[in-house]
Amino acid sequence: MNHNNKKKIIFSILSIVILILPGMALASIDSGERFDLTQHIIGFTAISIFILAYAFVMSEEFTHLRKSKPVILAAGIIWAIIAAYYASHGITHAAEQAVRHNFMEYAELMIFLLVAMTYINAMEERFVFFSLRVWLIRKGFNFRQLFWMTGILSFFISPIADNLTTALLMCAVVMSVGGNNTRFVGLACINIVVAANAGGAFSPFGDITTLMVWQKGIVDFWTFFNLLIPSIVNFLVPAAIMYFAIPNESPSIKSDLVIMKRGAKRIIALFLATITTAVCFHNYLHLPPVIGMLTGLAYLQFFGYYLKMTHQRSFTRYRIKLSALSKLRTTQDIDERELGDTVPFDVFNKISRSEWDTLLFFYGVVLCVGALDFIGYLSLSSEFMYGQLGATTANILVGILSAIVDNIPIMFAVLTMLPDMSQGQWLLVTLTAGVGGSLLSIGSAAGVALMGQARGMYTFVSHLKWTPVIALGYFASIMVHMWINADMFNIN
Image (cartoon, rainbow, N blue to C red):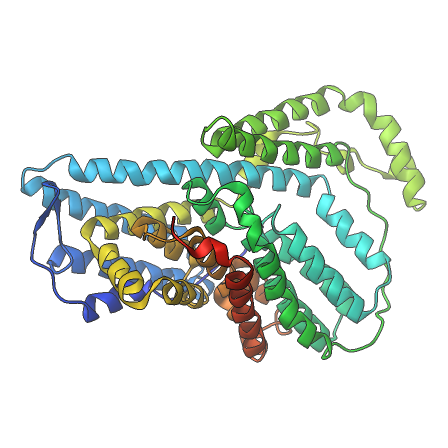
């Protein structure tokens, strides 16, 4: 899970809004403790620092500078400048209170994601995903069948795992059976990216953006599933068209049998129990979902202790089972490492393997966007986008921008603006932010990772050729949502 994640351009809408909206009075006071610094040197400096930081994020693939580093530094510098300005005017606590609020929002989301990543890492270490990959290869599907199988599985796995893990798993299958068939690998990768992004759009767990909306309490857990049919449309429309370009051939491959490590199925069950706990804590006990997720982490910790205490007792029996199934090796050939480490399961190893660069990048984004809101830029953006353009146009624009600019700062900006919108409009922006990244290969973590994994066969240009077809699915999903969920577009 160590890959170049979403790279992009700048949070350009903010600078555009500065140019097109009327100037604001310098240092006017809001609620007695907040200055409007949008036309002040402080504001211009802050947004310049953020743009510079995002330029480094965009160039990660070339500089090999992890994307978390520039945004973390930018967040610290921007807030320091703001705090110094307020302190010089005798207001010492306004910036502190604002940054604490932003940090608490980040902390809840970070811990939630950390628990989910820990479970994904545990399942990966127990060969859950590898076993699925080998099963698909051994079934002997032809290219067209495999195109549909990997797409459908991507769609339904990404709401539980994340779109990056799902895409990498399915791409490994495609690469294993596709060999040098560039056409099949390229089209299958496009299909996987679209399917993984679409699958994540209808689940609170499928994408960071949907998780942010759910954690904010704007849309409840079950309401997200109103996006299921629009998400299916978003996946099926381009897939149905691309299908006819897939070569009607059968690959010739072989693969050894792989079975999951001890406890793998029970870890899957515990992950589902953890999700259920988080939902119940939020819906019925009115506690933050992160409390339920941390409770679920304890399930995994106790199960890891059980695996450790029973490891030696199970080792001999399990090694014989492995040898019998493989039919290729004796029990002496099977190393204990195939069952796990000498300490059979250490939950803290799984936590350490989480994608910390992504989590820390998320911190920098939340703090930077929070600072720009504190300065006053997001109020201007909200006035222009949701006041002048209208909610529907603005939300569609959010999806298009997410193909260029990272969807995390865009969605956090929308949530910070908190425009007065109906449930239907909130679902619309959730949908567009989730699937808009499919329009370009650089528009999502899944697309960027697959460009590296299938280098030379899945490229920016090969994806761009099918962008009109993907855009057809994008707008079709919007129309379907506005049709089948029409009753949700009225503000009560």
